Image (cartoon, rainbow, N blue to C red):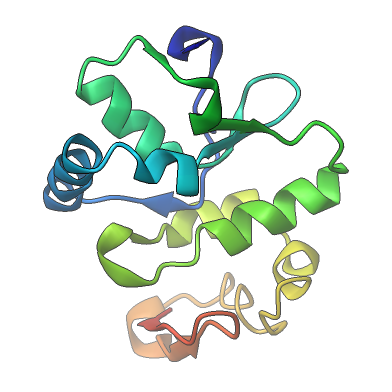
Length: 150
């Protein structure tokens, strides 16, 4: 068993989850806990979540103190760049599970980081715009095809 107190959420996670989506996730975990083995929480060598921040939060909200070893995978051999790429790929905002936290992507990720996963150079390049409302454009994630205004 792994103590959840030994795991820390990634404070720079580039995705957020709505309260209603969190309720659906908690219901899913309660209904089908076996799915946690199929989509485990992935942590780095220091116990910080690389993949599964919402699942981790759902487990905590459900009152779990510890989970089976098979619900957590340690990605101890990834380089820092590989960890960043994994976080982006794992957090692809497809389905009901969440959406990109654009402010976190703007502040916590470089264009180089994003381009490694197929985002183009213009994705974050609206920082200098004074009237962002008029300059919003539709951006499509090259990985999952999700479109959103940015």
